[in-house]
Length: 265
Image 1 (cartoon, one colour):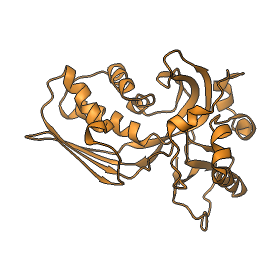
Image 2 (cartoon, rainbow, N blue to C red; image 1 turned 180 degrees about the horizontal axis):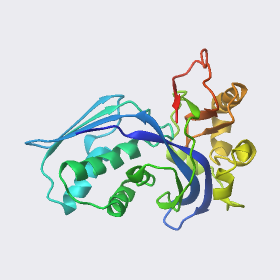
Image 3 (cartoon, rainbow, N blue to C red; image 1 turned 30 degrees about the horizontal axis):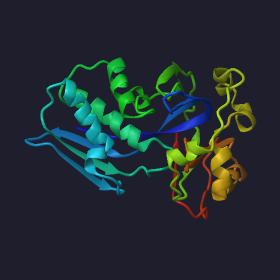
Image 4 (cartoon, helix red, strand yellow; image 1 turned 45 degrees about the horizontal axis):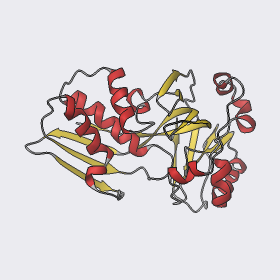
């Protein structure tokens, strides 16, 4: 069975509290975008994981796809499977590509082997693999809090909006991003802010920009370039380094000098 794990962007990202377990509480809106990896899972005589496309560092046993398979195998009598991941989404970009792959492995295994796992159960399994993995189970606009696993429905439709994502080949580690951040509570009504796009440019922020942009000034320059091209909103996604811009119409990004993804939401 083929599936196509997609990315997410963050519309606002606030680090609201440092937790006793060493993690942080946050507030954000996850929004799905169809920039996709390719995932194939079929029954097999022996378990095999194959990864092509962009290279993924680390041991195979540490890959989130393999971890997702092993997680379900602890509780279900899952036959051996051949899992082939073709990696297109860049890593270290703040787009959730690895989390998406893991979430889609869980969903695809559930369907291929008819495990009957409910959506809430799938989300609980996904949350064990990573903070934003659970989002990709339902894969719809969602306000997330806690570590990123507490969800609230978000009525937000950007259908028809043009999006440009610039990836400047700068890898920002999550640990590096969190190391300098200063948690603070969000003041105001986040749901209401998301409904008023006229306020996004001045009031909807990714707090990681405060610590990442001084270290990587190029990212701030890309954000300003997107605004100069006519974006009604531009931001870093997640902990970076991808920068996205939202436009009311198609925009010419020739000459920007970095890999880009462009499409329509």
